[in-house]
Length: 79
Image (cartoon, rainbow, N blue to C red; front, side):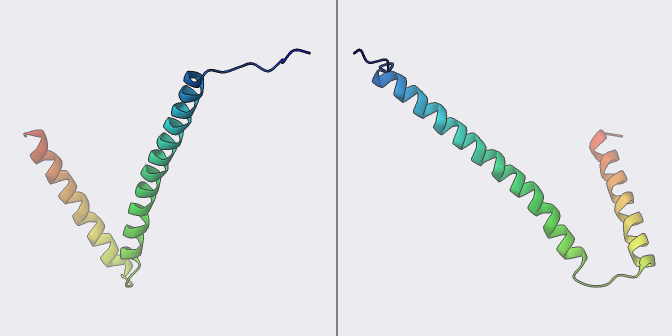
């Protein structure tokens, strides 16, 4: 009886291992990026909910933030 299993060389095994390691590293990097992106939103949400703001105060802060963003974009665009 002959062996029907395919014999692999050490080179083939090394290539498989590096590909697996690359996949794991890429997966971990992507998960870390997702975690950082999600945690930024969570932290800002916690800061917002630390104390109660009246709706009128929220509205004023929202308008001020929009003005700051607009002024900043004008400064950065060179106008």
